[in-house]
Image (tube, rainbow, N blue to C red; front, side, top):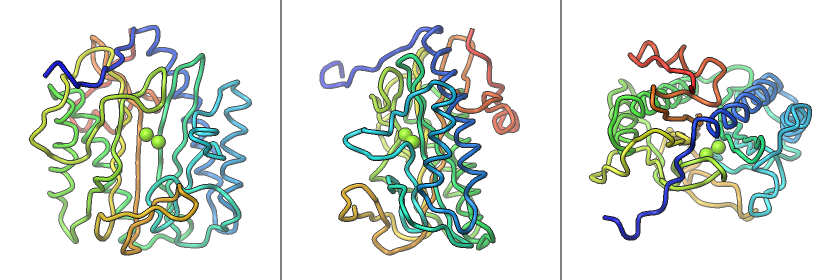
Length: 275
Ligand code: MG
Ligand code: MG
């Protein structure tokens, strides 16, 4: 259908190369924040560590000031799903925290999230994080092998339902998105299978692929701070995210230093640098 379809911004190779620069700064900032996530530190400390890397690189934060958001990362701990605000909360042994951040270089955006288990991991939390991360890579691989954006959610859904053990829930209230001259752009990138195939995958498409999985029910609520999203049943949640570019020779994960090779090659996809 031609009418009512949100307009997708298709990038040139040179624009995607700048997005790659933003992705590499972001990857380094996340490395630093992840390394700093140990028992006894505050979530505000992680924000400071992340912001320092962006500042040093001359990159801007796309989170800070976004609809008034007061920090450069979202820190979502345990039953918090997404959009947690860094502050005085002290991380404790066994906490599971997702750190979601972004960077802008010369007007082009990147967006990526990782989950860390602080100190000693509950095996079920470790499994939650491992499955969410693997689901993200299945979704990214589907961007290379699929025809439509809907193939990403189908690949994530099929993988999560195929994993043995206690079933994990895929959140439906929050989804991935297009990215480029803004952080959040069309199209939506669902993390589950639907009858809608979505727009065609073609060169210039850049997507943030970000499955969010939970150990319990998928119902969520927003806390009184108007940002922090929690699971209604209080069960723990997890998020992994990368920004990925499609170009005429293949795909390249913009927020991974190796373009995603380590995790994509075993899935039969070899990432190709942006020409
Ligand atoms: Mg994000
Ligand atoms: Mg995102």
